[in-house]
Image (tube, rainbow, N blue to C red):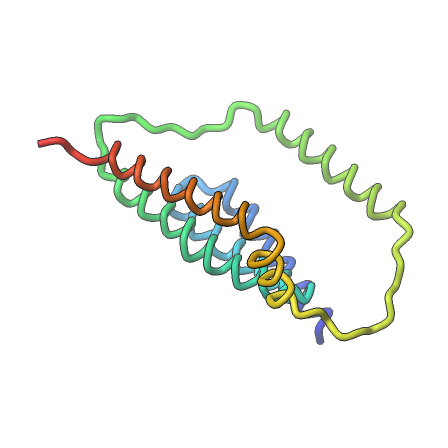
Length: 162
C-alpha cells in the first residue's frame, strides 16, 4: 500500500509539474504549481523529513504560491501591455531535459545503494531547532535582520508619494 501511495504522489508531482510548464494560462500554471508543492510535501513525508514537509507547506504553499497568485490576479487587469509567453526553443529545451534525465538515470543505475536496517527515524525538528538556536544562532539572526531590511526597503520603494 505504501508503494502505491508513493507512486501516486510521484505521478501527481510530475504530472502537475508538467502542467506548470505546458499550460497556456499563467493562473492555471500557478494552480498546477500548488499540486506540485503538495506532491513534494508528500515525498518529504515518505523520507521521514517531517520538518521539511511542514516548511514546504508553510513557506512555499502558504507564502510564495499565494504571492504568485496575487501577482497574477493583480496584474491581469493591465491591458496596455502585450504579454506573450511563447516558447521559441522547445526543441533545445527538450534536448536539455532529455540529457538531464539520461544523466540522472545513469547515476541512479550505477550507484551502489546501501540498504540500512529499519531503524527509528530521527526527530528532525528537535535536531534542527538545536542547531538553529545553539550552533547557528548568529547567522540565523543576521539573516533575519537582512530580510527585515529588505522588507523595509521594498515597502519604502513601493509606497506612493502624494
